[in-house]
Image 1 (cartoon, rainbow, N blue to C red):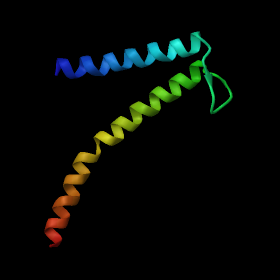
Image 2 (image 1 turned 90 degrees about the vertical axis):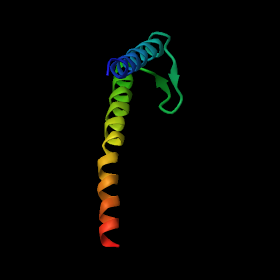
Image 3 (image 1 turned 135 degrees about the vertical axis):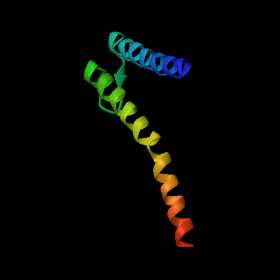
Image 4 (image 1 turned 30 degrees about the vertical axis):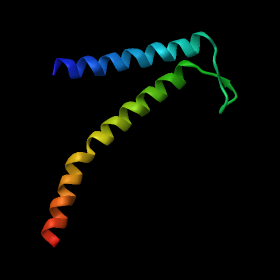
Length: 73
C-alpha cells in the first residue's frame, strides 16, 4: 500500500513540477496561441485525476455487465 501511494504522490509532484516549468519558462501552447499559465496547469492536472478515477471505476461495472450477460444466456 505504501508503494502504491508513493507512486501516486510522486506523479502528483512531477505533474506540478513540470507544469511550473512550463509556466516559468513561458512555453507557448500552440493550440491556444498563448503561453501556459497556472490555470492551464491546474485544469490539466484535475482533468487527468478525474479521468483516472473514472477509469478506475470501470472494473466493477464491467464485472456486473459480465454477470448480466451470463445470466441472460
